[in-house]
Image (tube, rainbow, N blue to C red; front, side, top):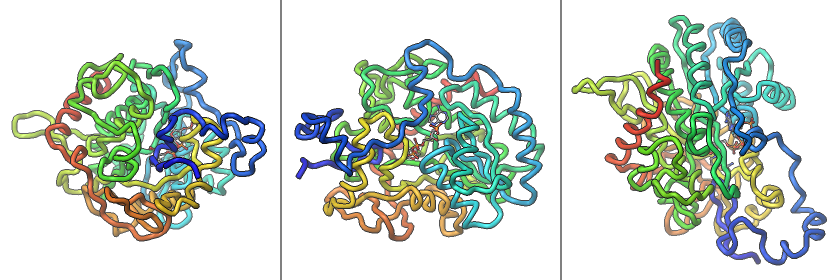
Length: 418
Ligand SMILES: NC(=O)c1ccc[n+]([C@@H]2O[C@H](COP(=O)([O-])OP(=O)(O)OC[C@H]3O[C@@H](n4cnc5c(N)ncnc54)[C@H](OP(=O)(O)O)[C@@H]3O)[C@@H](O)[C@H]2O)c1
């Protein structure tokens, strides 16, 4: 048996040699290729990889079709609720679109994606009806793109509210030896997973307020929660410190201000503050913007969810190929933890948090715990089981830290709020 391999929601981490195969496998590449459990997943398009280190921009300005595609979406929506899902072109997001449009009545999805052609292709493969969604360009590695997308959506909504917003897009770059940066110079995991969504929420909050029973869901991760198996046992553990890196802004490589880059930790840190995934527009007593997420804001339900460990998504595209392919098999056999969840089931879970009346409660970190076992520090969120209200770890609940995260993030997105 291999050494303890624990399900980080963000991937498989082998404590003995993170980033490398166990010795028996690494020594024999031919045996790896032949092993049925270790078939490499199909090559996937990875724009972030394409641009890495070339100094090119991820977003080269407002695409001419942006306005037209949103206008067309709004023409098609009719009386249905509008649900924006970021990163809907693969994995959890794609399966959530499928579940939402097939199992629930009255939803229309604006799939906010960096590659609209990829979205259309994936939707066709999944059998998603073209009348139920529209792919619209959103590049999360660019705050300018977030601003353009939001501005256009607001303009075309013309007073109609936005019913649902799902912050799902993310990257996981554990094997990068050096950091990549977004167009505005933020470390990629922080920029895509947190900052772009923070800005998106700031900009769209007035539109969410206009809807009758709006909901916002920030897709979370156990890796950012120290009270879980993956969040506490799998190194590196998330630790945002005093958010010195966020305070310092562009060019920082780690949220805690450290100068030494660690891609796995960067992902976990970026997922560590779902409560500050966004905020929006309210004014406190002193005239300063409030940190409104997870507070009682009548009319908007804010929540977060952990979908389970979905080993087959493209989140693991930057991992060594054998890991993605072997992962579910390993995990199904892993009696101690058993946290594997299929993409279909994970998509159904996300759709449930968006649409199920049971999930219409603010401030909750929704989880499911079917097969998964508890190991001292908490559960691991396996397949099956009912929706339940999970608890956040102390780090996630730390109010002072949350306020810092909100204040510093606000400073960074300020130029894009107008
Ligand atoms: N997989 C797991 O075990 C797991 C566990 C817990 C939480 N999660 C969370 O689930 C969410 C979805 O992840 P996943 O597992 O479904 O992985 P995934 O298949 O890689 O999905 C991530 C999505 O984000 C999009 N994305 C990445 N960079 C982007 C950018 N710069 N601009 C716009 N979109 C971008 C990707 O677009 P492309 O299609 O163009 O690549 C993709 O559609 C993430 O928030 C992740 O943290 C996953």
